[in-house]
Image (tube, one colour):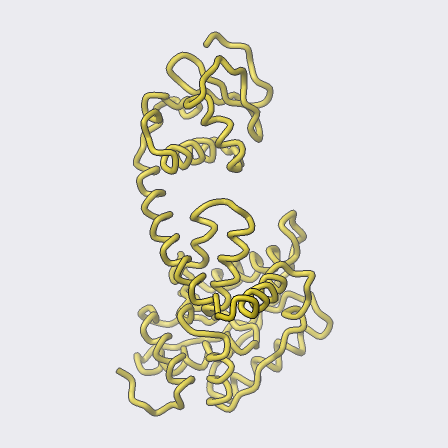
Length: 317
């Protein structure tokens, strides 16, 4: 247990980081905001006690006027508090998922390129927003699972702390932070979700963020378990064929995952509607013709489901 040499909020951040800190050196993704600034200071505190080093990496997306200056100011603030910081510029390529998603992908790629464990400053409030957005997508338990504490090189030590905790921790450390105007721009889905959570809390008379974060923990455990079971189901060879006998009798939640994984391995970007349409070839077989899926079609042929690239072919059933 760490000695109480820090004020309460700073100590809470530092201890959360210490509990999740991997062995050896780490990098900290830092935007200059309160969450990542507190994380960087907590990481420097915790890593230093292990004889390791925490380096803040500030990713400049170049999406706002003066972004270079903002990044430099964030690095300077951290440097004044003994945290090494460097700036990495990235180019955000437009994508069909929108600017917010494209910026996130570019940022994570730049951080992963550091070839060290990466600490990210997401809090319980961010987790709640992720669950709400997942609920609105309506794509099952995986979308409700939110952000994992550890996934690949990325570690999120602050998922049990609130945004107010990180802001108070910065005050405890005597460091200012950058207020990103994009955090108030309703053009971004996450900002709208944040406002909706505040409205729900007001109308219900209770803070709903902790319950949504608990939902993420439970949904992730369920999704991980079902995904592992689905991965163990052998659909047979060749890859374009799935044996009906291997699928029949499986519970819906498992069978749908197996079908989704089977199509994904074939390069089919199937959504849940595609999965359910293919599933009808098993559960509501009435001699249907080909089921169109992205990149091809699936039909029932004898004791198998068969994927055909491009237009479907007339084959004996």
